[in-house]
Length: 420
Image (cartoon, rainbow, N blue to C red; front, side, top):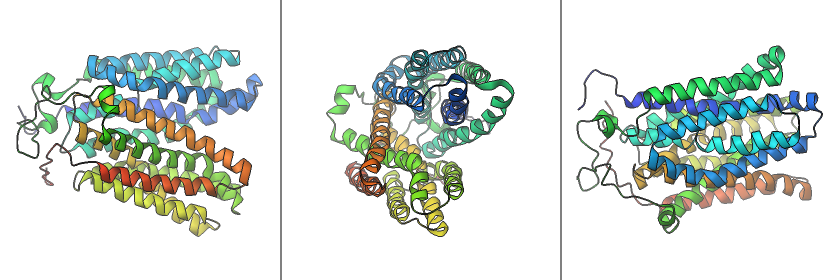
């Protein structure tokens, strides 16, 4: 039953998801700083480090659908505990590595598997089960930990490297993963509100569909991997996510050298990237929350259209003014799409098989990023320009809009009360 005046337990689920996402993407985001110290100390080539990063992404994409399916079977809590334990073990083992093979095993394989049990799948899955009317707002608070964690860990890592070195920095990351994820997950994580006699959003009754009928968690449709891959709506969702993520990753990796090629100084291009990362925090807080008040699909399409505009601005960004027009539009529209797609997945496919859906969607997003990053470098080597990858990204975003338009209406009736 709903306890008026008492904090809804679902917000504790948001906190656990926030910590999981923050640790996962904060530690990964800081690796760009840490690797320079590793290279200097160990004398490795950059290709050896880049290979481990690629292996990490490949392992993640391969394993995450099955991790998502497992969440639906044994619960998010158990998956989070395993993920945090493996993440901490991965970083701890990195403190004693001596050879590139050891680095590949720890960072490429073990941490790649650990990442499937942390971050962008268990967090949104848990939050999506606890919220319906406030799903966008709850996801925005949980997932903002991704850009925020990257910024915080990047700053902290610089100090840790100066005082403890890269091995000591990895040891701190291991301890933080164990303490800040395992303990909250064990103490606070519950799979669904129904498990403790509650309903989503703290309401007194179960969510209702468009026909006005209450939807029981146990009675919701179950989606297997085979069933998902036979569903046109699932393919539309996954392909939309693939193109959105691919364009965003390409811009994140290649925008600085592109801007320098367009005539900006290295400092100006780097400052533009930093501003973009700051606006990503606002984007994640803004778009999922907005989508609680308008049709979710419309919010996705508006954000994608803005990214298309940003793509054209990036192509022509040869001045500070044009560059920051791109930064503002793309920065405020990109990162929030991850929360929008997570909310949209829960709206369309329900809560019961959300881990499976999010797991497959994460695979498509990871593959989109990997393909776009590689093609960006490949195209530049051939044409001496990044414009082709930007135009490809724009075409991909248009296809993402078409895919989003194909998605039907949610089976859940929001019944939004703005005053709530």
